[in-house]
Length: 190
Image 1: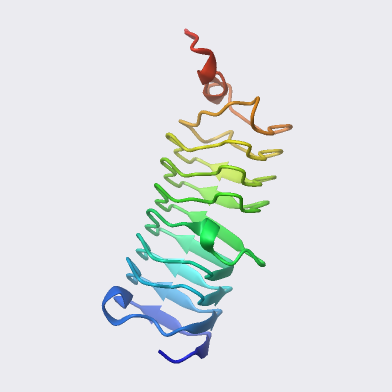
Image 2: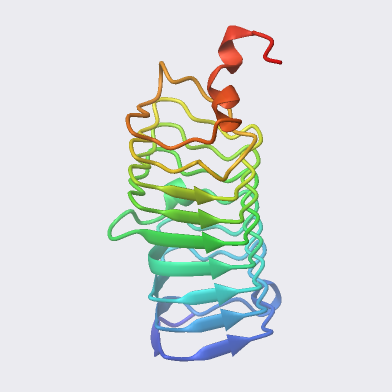
């Protein structure tokens, strides 16, 4: 496929898993109701792009640049964001399913997850300083040596991590959510 530069274009109801996507740079584009499942998006740049109601499940994103990419109502199952181009990486997720995805060792300061399902997502060694998890389900999400300073979990639920192996200074939690910080002690709270 030829390298191309596409600006300010709307892509609607395109099944890229059947026809593929041209390599290149997509700047200020909108992708609405598109299917990227299993597609090789490696080394493609998405700059200031919006994705709505798209399916990215099991897409290959090695070297993919997401510079100010916003995802709304998207399915992003099993994505290895840690393989993306980390230069100017900026992501935002609203009402997305990110189960089994990985953000291993990324710097994601001020990232926002709103109304997302984050089951078994790997945040190992990720810098989530000032991150906002608004009304998110973090069932079995993995936090090991993660920087969570000033992160906001106050409206999220089902998270469980060890404060002794994660940096949580000034992070926000709800009173009920604090139970997720005590799991390793195998205590009964009534």
